Image (tube, rainbow, N blue to C red; front, side):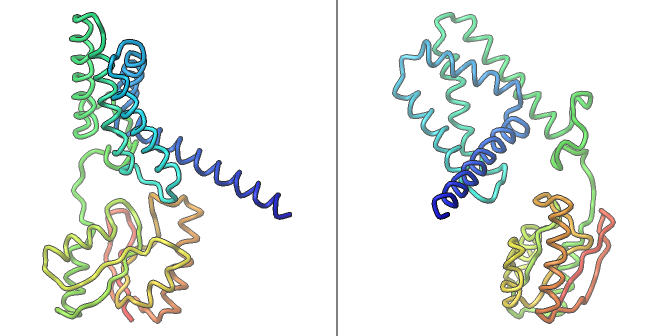
Length: 267
């Protein structure tokens, strides 16, 4: 029985590692490099293998790239930003492979094409220009620019009126892209307030984490880029139970742009 359990655990680890690897590769393609730039990377990789005389440098860069993906594949929490560590070797291998070509004309043309594709991608991701090439609502930073008030300023003002300069711990439940503990920390820092903010990420540990909090901030209905609909429902139920058992009561609410409500809880 023990041997079979070990085998099943090993299979689960392999599945998770493989899944993480595919996910990060997809995020680099989708949000950072695009299909065109990845095509040039593979061209540069092949050219480096065939023409490059700097084999040692190439192996160092390849080890960097493989090592970055290896570490990312074992991380439990996935975030596309972590894959930035893999971008420098991608870029250097691409340019190094093209630079190793013996024909100067091709060496000149390919970098120009890469630069044009890079500029096009920059304007597409940053400004949705040209709009005909944009996938609508592909990701939250690819949406049309919006002016929205997520009431973070009002939440901080309410807490500061209530607690003044008293040192308190605020628990912020991770929700949607524009309503999170990072935004709360920003406003508290700008206001030079002596508050500590912690993000309550682990549903199973919320009850324990809330014991150290004086204030909790969340939103209803719950939504998060980290959970699907089923996961969001479970998280919301666990959160509600933890707030009740911790002696928290709803003190103030604010209407948010996504037709939900921000709720401030106090002990």
